Image (tube, rainbow, N blue to C red):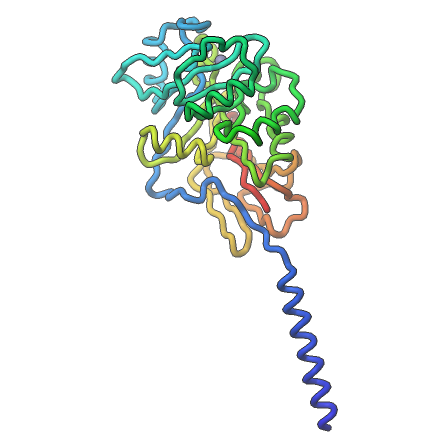
Length: 324
Ligand SMILES: [Zn+2]
């Protein structure tokens, strides 16, 4: 009897130890949520276009008119980003973010916010030299309309790894969309995210790239911040606390209320009204539909997870969650 009891004891000890070892070896799935810091009851939604031209470069409208157009459409702010030139007039009409679009024909265009000096030899610089300059000047940069170029994905990855103030790409750009890619450069975005996530997020921007009235109020970004001031804007665009919207197919857009992540069970839930379909995307593939997903239970989710919310006509793209 004693022998039996002691063997049961040893057996149970073995089971416990093996369970313990198993638990220790089990890797926890971690989520990196760009919207984590947001207090949904406190923030306001600021509608912003980060890519706008005026007659100071190749735009067709003077800046006074551009500013009042955006004001009339209830934008909170715009960045006037003339080519290799700072256009930053004093105005009480609308909040302006200082910006420039660096690059000429042979260079990949780069929009820089909050850095305004233009290097003298700008047209001779390589993209890496422009990015180095923006880093030094403490600007915040994103690649404009990547769909216009035939760049190797490795070219982008290398630059994202090297320049910390390079924070995203323009996924939605009116010029690209009217040429057939109505849903924007999501293909390029996914190819980049496949390689950089979860360690290095690459945020997606949606802009008009306004040159004339046909490129007005088509795409915009909603910044989720408390106050419209430089510090908060910088923080939000560096951390991805925004999402992009498009009205290229019509102005009936979904209304995003909030995004809640339950880390314990691994669930992300989108609170949204007026939508037709929600798509969850990882590694360039659709991995789920509907308001919620469990990232701990799906084997198809690797590196990142991003969300597209499609309304009757308009649509919203969220910034990617990192999945580790
Ligand atoms: Zn432009």
